[in-house]
Length: 432
Image (cartoon, rainbow, N blue to C red; front, side):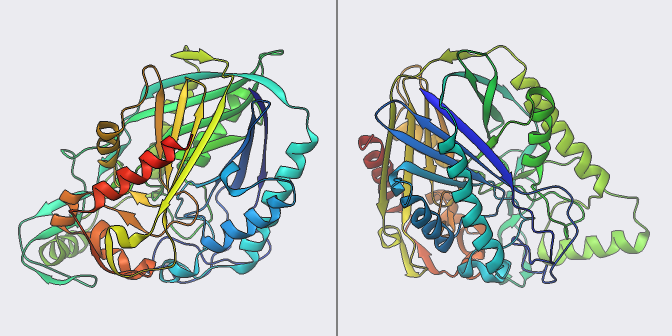
């Protein structure tokens, strides 16, 4: 397998921009905490080639995906050879009109990102391909928590109105997470130098404090750590099925006066529990600890080293009507699969997928013996959340609360959603 890799900074520095991720954050911001970047890896096996992109963005919108596909077609790439993944940071400029309530898109930023993506590919194509091997390293972190918590008491909120019981967004340590982090080092066969890193973890990028700054969130902290170790390498972040997974930050913020504690207690009585207050030091401690954990994994012995000889890709789509009834943007559910020999398989889905889908897909479509499979959400033109049948019955933000923010209005079909999604994934894998 041959590899070329590059990255670039796309931070808007010449103007304030509206960030995506929080409906209550309406004012443009100009303070940059750390850069937002694009990273790209071009993989080739002599017969096939594949571009893997990682964007510091909440999502890759449909219009941006179309613009990138159109630009790259001039260089001979077709959509099946391109995977566009977002880190899901809530501190980068907005890009999607369908999600305007979460942040009105900055059209100049969208145009700049499309142009920068093409320029990265131009740069890659000028470089000499390097024969590479893949080092797979894995380890466990302790930095996330499930955010779906059953609350058996009446609540009143802006999103749902009055409910006798419900599912609130608050820490639920007893619910599933995915703490296994993976680092793939693409290392040159001739010189043993690291060409690029591809790393995977499952956690919402929602922790930066203050919230009115431009930031890559924890993927940026990890990128800095990996670059301290390996030099200025491209770092592709593959965000896992983190639809219901949030940062587990231990800090409780500053000591509150009695009035603040009373207000929080009153909010809990009215709307149910939520995450504890945090300050910037809590965020810094958490993100640097996560970065140190990933860096330690990168420095550990490889679980497996392989020089893949075959690059295989597959894709499939289904309309949302197969599992959702109502109004929704013109976006299908898309699944792309990338396989590197017998070492690694990446399954990416164009949705905010909740973590339990990982076990559902593993049970229905087991990975091959010895094959490391990674699951990614936030592929391309994302339409919204993908809950499980159990979660559909429970309700909550990932089932109904998100819909108006993403341009949807309707109901998930709990009986149809698993057959539809598993069938789509099977067709994508069969297409390899």
